[in-house]
Image 1: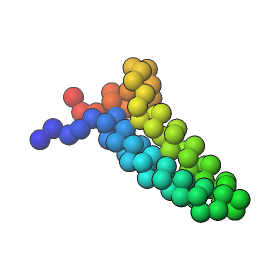
Image 2 (image 1 turned 90 degrees about the vertical axis):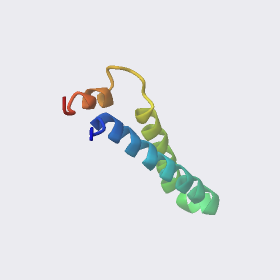
Image 3 (image 1 turned 60 degrees about the horizontal axis):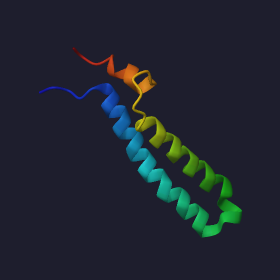
Image 4 (image 1 turned 90 degrees about the horizontal axis):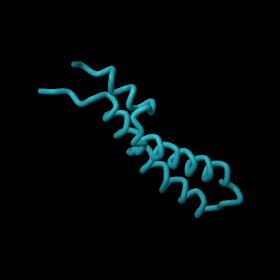
Length: 72
């Protein structure tokens, strides 16, 4: 059985975390934005950054370099 490339595993984990953090950040903003604004904004920004890293199609990205570490 062939193992998945390490970059695919990292991309999948980043997408999962982004999809978990985004609704949580929206919930913090909805619950009480005056009190939880640092939490809400940081979770939303982190989820957007994770999605940006995971969906980066460039060949010179750091995730593409992780793919080179896999078994041959």
